[in-house]
Length: 363
Image (tube, rainbow, N blue to C red):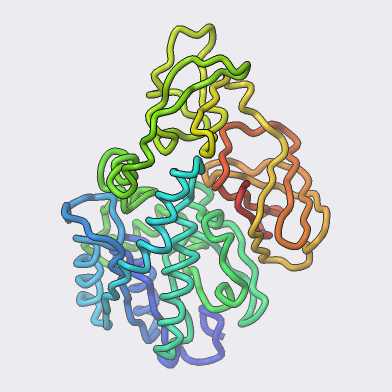
């Protein structure tokens, strides 16, 4: 077996590397090229970006040029695929619709679900590649079938949360060669390889939001969502007016425009149908039980079961122990301790120690 798990020589293993133009995917491509694999780099053009010098972007402007230069430096083929329409339909449109519906989307998961592990993965198979490689910090274990997903060695960079929606056949096909390294080690490799991206900053969470606020994008694409409505306290007293629920998120405190209260107030509820917002003290935002739908399991042994495990509802959160209850396509997680500022539209991802069991979308 070679390092990617195929029973063939490296030179006979055709690898497509998704190159975003950043340091991680560049190192992944060059590392495999130096090991002797038949590497082709592919960069997806996902959105227009007029400011091509933006330092924390991904798959646009200068990033595409950086990926090309890395491929030229190490003499492997590189292609650019224009996926702007697919990215808009699968990610950006969903992002805007979610906020318009009073939800909080997670666009990195949507991107992995659609253009990367659906469209690009199929493109890789069309090119007769053995595998699609990405620069994600996660660990895949197993053979060609029935593989499992685990957290990365570098817990500060772990991206397993964003990969929960990966289908089993997709996980069997993709590889994450950086998952067993620390970020500092990857930076050292980039310096050793003399890559032009060796000191490039990591991309930001919402790469396609090129202004200071995601609200600018929402206002541009759906200006009609800015319909003024009432702000209430938990007792139903009107305490102010809002500027459109798409401009607010659960747990928000700043920029609400309501002052003079005994305690600081946070957004507790967004009601799209009746166009109102409810504010409450921080302690009243805490909950133990979260319901979700559209479950994706990466370990089918837990299907339709009650299970003691851990979960988290944000990528930056530590997992919290609790009880998972699943049925066919929905379920709930009962945390052993309260969790705050959670909104519909976020993902609840389940773990058993380091293994990702699956997840669902919070309703």
